[in-house]
Length: 239
Image 1 (cartoon, rainbow, N blue to C red):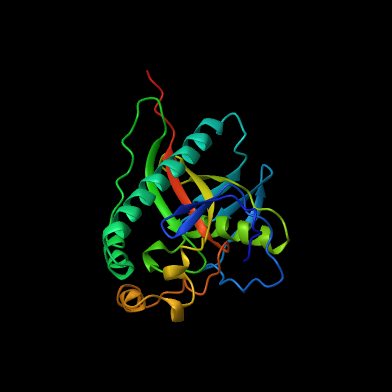
Image 2 (image 1 turned 30 degrees about the horizontal axis):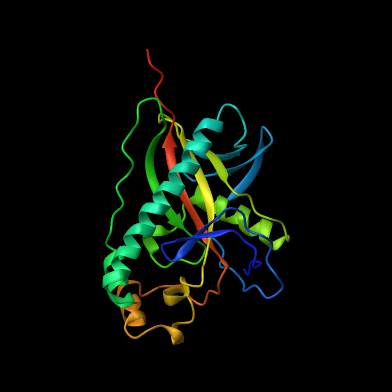
């Protein structure tokens, strides 16, 4: 999905965190549909994705006073995490060939931010897409709802939300808050997400070895890639 030249972007591990995506043009390529089906119904004015285990993921307004602090904290965590990932990639690229970096970076596990008293706790970090490279990043039903929402906005020539917030509820478990931010491909991303015929020597071989079912290729610069998401729990109320 092609984005206009004035889209605001910041490089993020072969992808971009977008301040805001603009509508797709007529040349956009078809996007794969999320695995499984997601059923929507209205609940207090919000779309809710019903999951097979009976839990629900409801989109909520990030400006709602009840969730604003969690939403803003999650958004800041995405920016912080993105900066850490950029630093790691740049460090590897400074001393290694791209093919070597692909082999190394896929093994890196990013540590979750340490809990801070009185702040939400980050319980998970995830990148996911409709066009997957690593099957371990496949969207669950709640993720698929977020991807579908952004995809629908783009297909309707609308600017997608800068941030999506979900309230995920499971019986007998604390509420999980999810904050999503769209990501898109930059020119530098195309070194391993563009046309495989243009990859530098060794890159395609490394990708074929690590990701034999890779679908995250054939992208152009500024095309929507997917989302980055952080999951959080609300801070514990002091007694």
